[in-house]
Image (cartoon, rainbow, N blue to C red; front, side, top):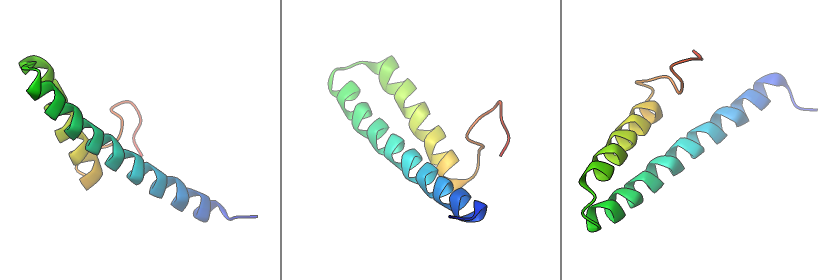
Length: 68
């Protein structure tokens, strides 16, 4: 039986990995959008990429509706 702190620690690790994965995928999607000349889509993906970086660095909460 794992303790609550171990469970929370694993959840936080999973969250960090998921945010890093999302950011990586956004970077790849940006390259695709750039190659297609989809300027507005590229811009929106860049904004999401920056937001994911801010969440990853702890400068922003993961949700505007729920505070951690």
